[in-house]
Length: 153
Image (tube, rainbow, N blue to C red; front, top):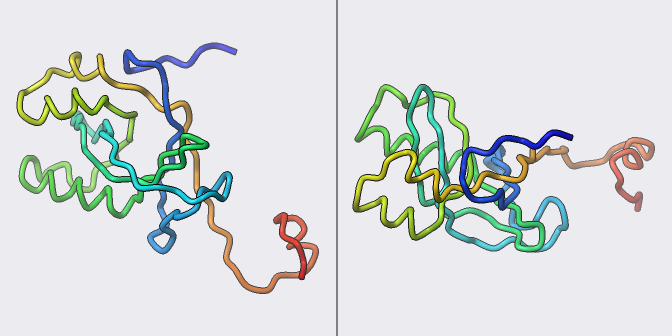
């Protein structure tokens, strides 16, 4: 299997998911069902057409699975607030969370302007992107419950 190209100079580190459900806050890991913790990450985000930003964001994190869960509504609110001040024309554009930046490099970038190449020296891509899917609750026929992997009570 061919190796996936990397943007950052650091090896891929975490799995990442962007939670689109505003009513689900991921207090438990969707993979292992253990409680998640809150942890601040410096996320590198590309906003179309050519905006690159390192944004400090507190996300849900599962240390066992090394899974970062960012809530889409919170992230988009931060991006809108930021770009209202700097470049309102990109508000609402598509974006992609690329990876994480080392905290020290991110902090230095807050006070001194860094080039894209300098930031990519401290960037770790994600190992994979995951998707959170929601299944509505309630009563379902026994056959459908078995397909979902639920036990009938």
